[in-house]
Length: 146
Image (cartoon, rainbow, N blue to C red; front, side, top):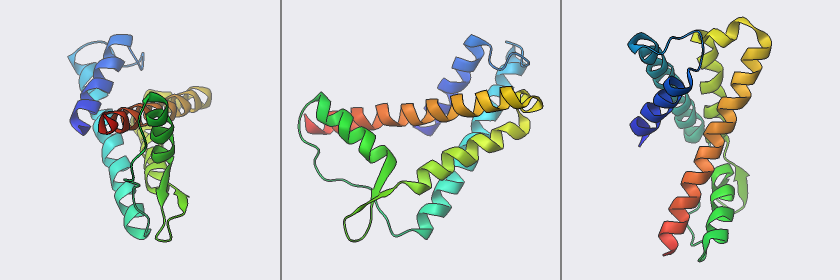
């Protein structure tokens, strides 16, 4: 699934020409793919390391039936984990991974040259990744309830 996400994001960037400094050529597409690979490597690595340090786990209890329940569950389960006592905790591994991966991307992306563009890129990528995670999780919860 990670590969599909990386290719999809690279293709999306290619179609809209983002960033504009990377031409819409094979070379530009290669840079976009490299950006996605780098982002994913850092994001997954940080997520793994932070996850190993915390005794929290994913919630797999049933969500109920219906689209509204699936969306609610998708949002909650994207941003929280369960502690050993059953209480909800923020999903620090995932959130830290997304923030670290996005920050790392600014090392090689042209937006880093100007602070306003860097901030815009950072906010956009974090929003897209978190939004995509919510949609994916909501769909998985809806599918499981059928």
